[in-house]
Length: 248
Image 1 (cartoon, rainbow, N blue to C red):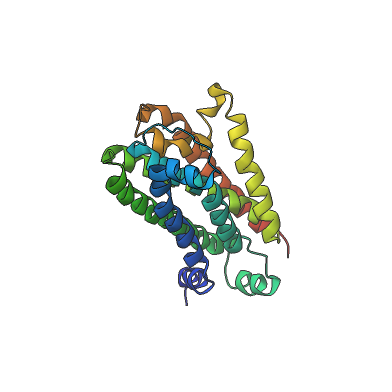
Image 2: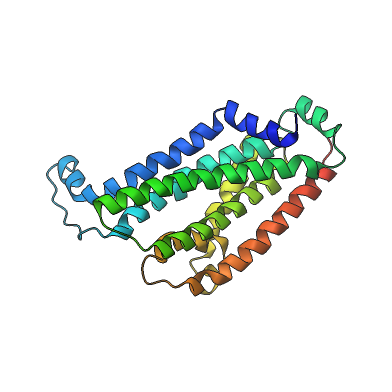
């Protein structure tokens, strides 16, 4: 059995793939419905409080989906990634695998690739459902903006997986890897409050999926995309070197 097949089977048989796709699919179905019927929902469960919302537009359906997966969905993605990328989480398995390869890179590449594909695929499933329901309930959205936003969101998810890999190869604790990764991901938008800095940060790409459906142009996200590519590559190099240097 190859390491690539091993990682795929681990992802499937542990139900991590089901959980990942399920979360993104759920929010893909929920987002446009929430955007379309938000005023009715508030009136029904708001204890008689009347709140006037502006009429929803198609981008609101995608925005609702993105708002949910950028929080809960991202947390699930980090959990799944940490479960695969903390190589030394199970010492016996780690010893078994390390003694059968010439470098940690051979263990890390399949894990990073499989997890990245799973996370990006789950996001695509959710976005596809959100797109379909948005068209049905709210109207059409620009295909070009959706496609470019998808690519930029995928790039951000690649960065997230690379971050978890860099953290995970320095620890034997899945919980610790999740915790530190989440701290970094939460800190980035805080630094991004300063506009001159924010447009260069990977977290700026999170808004591309919705921004490109409105007034934002592709050029607005070029600096963040360039930095994200460089940082993700650097994080993978760090993960490989940290894994090589770590002693069991």
